[in-house]
Image 1 (tube, rainbow, N blue to C red):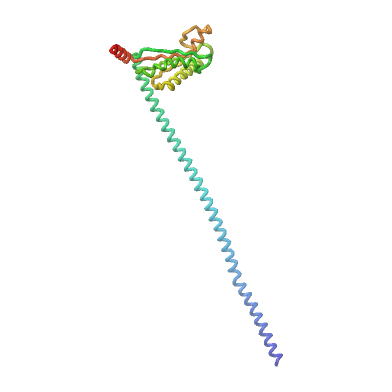
Image 2: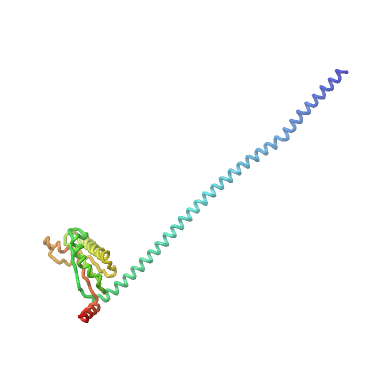
Length: 240
């Protein structure tokens, strides 16, 4: 009897063990696909996240480039606008200067010379010396009390060298005198009428050293309006 009971227990345990193994295998078989699908889903999610980040990075980079391009375009537009404005201003100034010069030329016969000064330069030089400045100062002191006048500034050279170069040199010499008078005595640019004549119209013989030195010159001549001069004379006479 005992043996029979023992056999039944053993059989029951064996059946339970077999049943347990079968259950585990069943569960394993049922959950394995789910686990695989979950892993695949996780992998796809990770891939999607990476793709989203990559897309976002590219989008941000694209936005940055677009903004930079827009900024550059804006800067170019601003530069172009400034250039256009500067060109318009320069054009208007040129027109005004042309109108002023036309007025001067139209009435130039009404101006008569009343004073002048001449300074000379070293060979191939266009720089004022201390003596030149002293002479110009003596002339410049008359300008503060003068009115209705023009300053005719004529630059010249000796006959040594290329004619075209001498024209340019004589112009630089005239410019040096104009800059000195304009800056020190606050003379308006509209009062100057300057020209570089190079070696033309020599005032002395270029065959001599002394003559060439005299031709390396700038002459400033004050021209006063005839009507103003008459008025000044009348005022002076009335004061006597």
